[in-house]
Image (cartoon, rainbow, N blue to C red; front, side):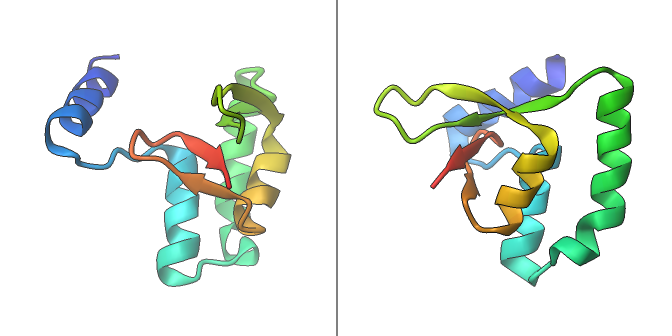
Length: 97
């Protein structure tokens, strides 16, 4: 919890970007052309960890004016990252384009 708070403070004070595990996939795709095929072993490893903790969804911000966070099935989020439908926010959260 403390690291997350520090990260948010850095974002608010200096404009630095935070990164989450999910946003790292967005960056790898965008910055070095990491494909879904390249990412698959890492996705499966992360998914097994999430499912082991009974996590079946990730939160992604929708495109509405209210900017609601929606619970999206984990596998769908990875599909949409590599389909270019999701972008990373400064907070490390994900948002639909």
